[in-house]
Length: 108
Length: 147
Image (cartoon, rainbow over all chains, first blue to last red; front, side, top):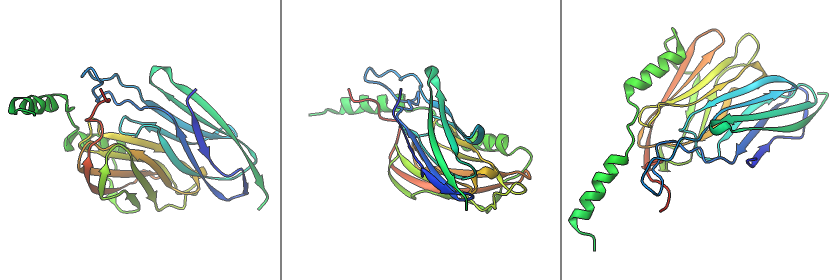
């Protein structure tokens, strides 16, 4: 399992727009860099990231080798109901990881 | 002491490992594929990035789009393209009214000084664009692992 860091508030008021910052440890090897033997290192990147909120997909991204190592993505969402946010990453060499965070929403 | 022959050999090697880069034509084709029939118009979108970049390996970048993000009027996709990295596409984000705010940040690699283009597609099919020229001092992806 790669180390994943997700920053988001644990509580929010209903209707509040919250920022979510997600980072995962991954080399994002581009396939264009030579290794110590001079040969190109094989490509190994995360291709997809998605975030669902109580089962509904609220954000997704397609990543390309131009994304830095340890991909960081920050985005926003509206707090609607208390529940779970699920973050998934998928990529080359069968990379797949899912993390969950819970959010408590109080009435506005 | 390093002789002239070694320097020459080094230059040849550098030229050899340097990857083929994308071209303005390839970027234009990728943008056309993303925007479909709509011609991207300047405005509504803002691409925030340092104009002078010391290290091309991790460049913070933020894209903001002016949009109420309501069910009737929202951003569906934000994409970033470049013209001189080995591949022209950088990232494509899929948003919706649940985002509340059309703003996305990430960190990217830049192989050299070049043009960056951000495009936003709205739910009505219109596309908006912002182009930024950046200067990169230390390029990403040219240097390999430490021997």
